[in-house]
Amino acid sequence: MIPVKKVEAIINRHNSLEKELSSGKVDSKNYAKKSKEYSDLENIITLARKYLNFEKNKKELDQIINDSKSDKEMIALAKKELIELKQLKENYENKLKIFLLPKDDDDKKNAIVEIRAGTGGLEATLFCSDLFKMYEKVCSKKKWKMEIISISKSEAGGFKEVIFLVNGNNIYSYLKYESGVHRVQRVPSTETQGRVHTSAATVAVLPEAEEVDIQIKESDLRIDVFRSGGPGGQSVNTTDSAVRITHIPSGVVVSQQDEKSQHKNKAKALKILRARVYEAEKNKRDKERSSNRKSQIGTGDRSERIRTYNFPQGRVTDHRINLTLHKLDEFLGGEVHEEMNESLRLREQDLKLKNLE
Image 1 (cartoon, rainbow, N blue to C red):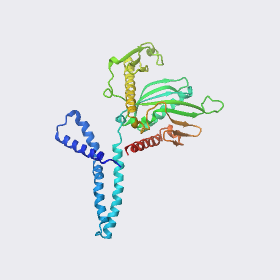
Image 2: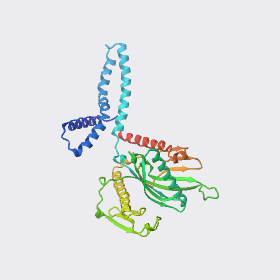
Image 3: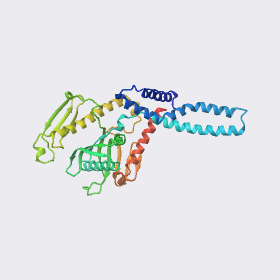
Image 4: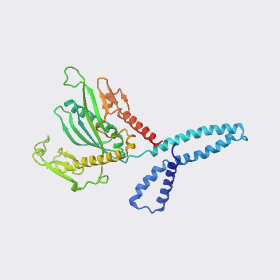
């Protein structure tokens, strides 16, 4: 049951905003923010009022049922109405609980995704490439824009590391569940005995941080330029186009050398650095709110083994919710990825709802 005070607070806040916005005295700086809050409350205000009226309506029906002067038909109608009223109250309560769930401000942001080959040698780099292709297909299916920031290829044709930005609506809310260790079990193409090998790749999903989200002082940065050592031709390797940026307070270091232009490499490196520093600050805040962490499925812990892709059995298993889909090819093709994601989101919602009770 939701405490009455919480529901009353919704109604009081709605009334206060309505009065404030209609007065014409809200400054332009806060108008958009308060209008958005008022609009969000408009979606739930009717339910909140009906929820508070439940006890009053129930009392009136109970009086009819228990009144010796009421005829049988009136009592029967009152009992039927009371059953319907209780069902409606349960419906209102569930919707109000979802509205009252703690909001993650980062859910609406774009996301920077970093995939790195882990244990397993060259086979791990091929798996890293497979994961990238899977996310590429998910983005294409959802009409999200993917922008590659950097790629480090292996001699086997896979990726040692790939970093990319995904632009669209509510990107982080979807992709945040991908953070962690992804494990693959399959027979490598180089395996002559047909033995199944286990390899791994680490996925980190960071909310894209804007300058307004976190302030990084120029004096806190050490910027080094050096000659690119990767592929790209003579024009890349003969100029100091590569950039290494160190955020001195946190120790976060980012190197970027994919572009021929030092300016472009610096801009990309700063984007990644800002996201990593922002994530570190976010994790620090989350640890301080430990009760909230317990209700999160997508904790962002990169050391947590979250998923296994088993090729011989054609299955993918998410260990956080013990869900197995025997649709590995479709999953890697981005076709049933939504099914797994929806299950993760519903599980997290259930955990948060229990915390409200």
